[in-house]
Length: 112
Length: 114
Image (cartoon, rainbow over the protein chains, first blue to last red):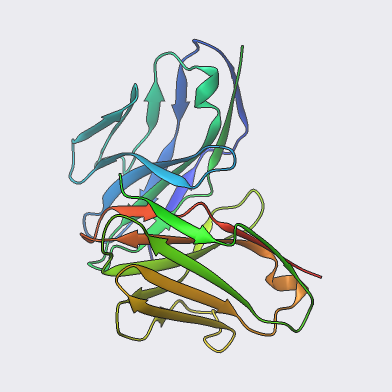
């Protein structure tokens, strides 16, 4: 079956530090890959996505590259801000219904 | 992006009562809606998928008679937790999709069953 594995949190960083959240997946076929972000007290928002191998998704300074050879979709940001404090979910879709399979989520805490 | 609302945002009820949660798309018509459940500090677990005008498809292990889903129109889906018990306390989230890939999530409803 399909699964998504993320690094456990919480990840605590100082402002302007480099952030990496690892995500690997197991899936049949070629899934579309996503990163969603959940800010405190808010619903999930799509952060970025990639639909095929070697695609790079980017948004708000975050980037992730679809690596088929390593079945990974690691999220990176070069310089985090306090406002980036949130829970980040890696996810994939493999079927035509668009059903999302989520990772466990990684809480990121950025301190001033 | 599209806006999805949920109502209520918080609900506290007594054990044995039923609770209805509404999910509305405010600025687009959703062909497919999803209902998720999220436990504290855990990921979202898909409960069911519904398409407008047809019966919901439930994930394995989700009781159809306990979690009634109605997708009456392209802008409204409801989840009714029937005869709620404390173990049903959770955060329920809906999402709506139009193109089979992009989902727009509601802000969630926190249910506490006493």
